[in-house]
Length: 72
Ligand SMILES: [Zn+2]
Image (cartoon, rainbow, N blue to C red; front, side, top):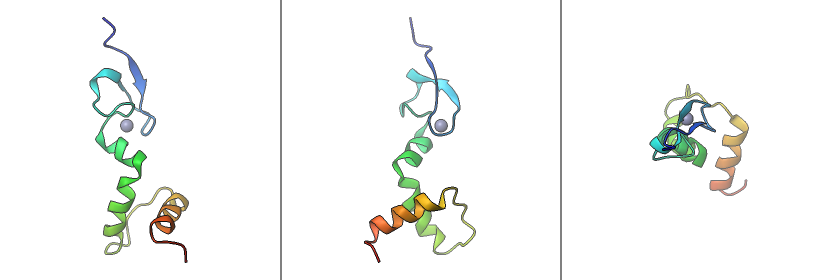
């Protein structure tokens, strides 16, 4: 049996058992959503009301927002 394939999540670098994650190659739902950029649009809605939202990659976020709002 080779059910214990250990891989590193491309997002959070955490090691997990590949066959035990529904969201492979990610360790979990959140990492998958981060990769899809889904969390950016969700966070952005919140960011309009809360300036303290933590954005790790401002450039990537900006690009995404410009893409979704048409260019200025
Ligand atoms: Zn992860």
